Length: 121
Image 1 (tube, rainbow, N blue to C red):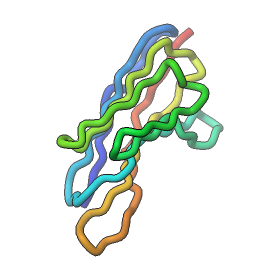
Image 2 (cartoon, rainbow, N blue to C red):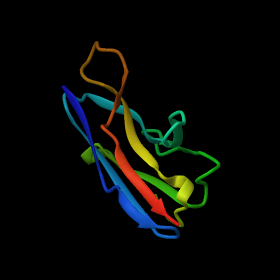
Image 3 (spheres, rainbow, N blue to C red):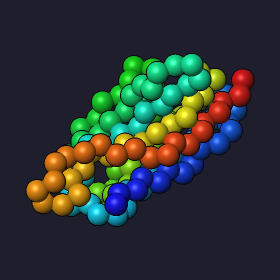
């Protein structure tokens, strides 16, 4: 069974920074893409940034220049550094991992439980 556990959320003032972490554990053969999504109250979940196993990234326009994603493949962990936070960044942040549990099993997307990020003005 695969688990994604996020940490690092919290309350921060506008202009501040946060670093989110997400570690995947359990039955994992290989992880392809990883990333972060967010969902604000009353809105749909949206992509923040994704990163491939080779390190290619895809940032949402709303966070370009303020967010940096990185991953440690040896630790099956992905990080999100967010700077110059704005109140509109307030949301529940979810990490995802597209992975194969074992040979012969298809690629599947797994989600973390979410971590709240609140930015006060």
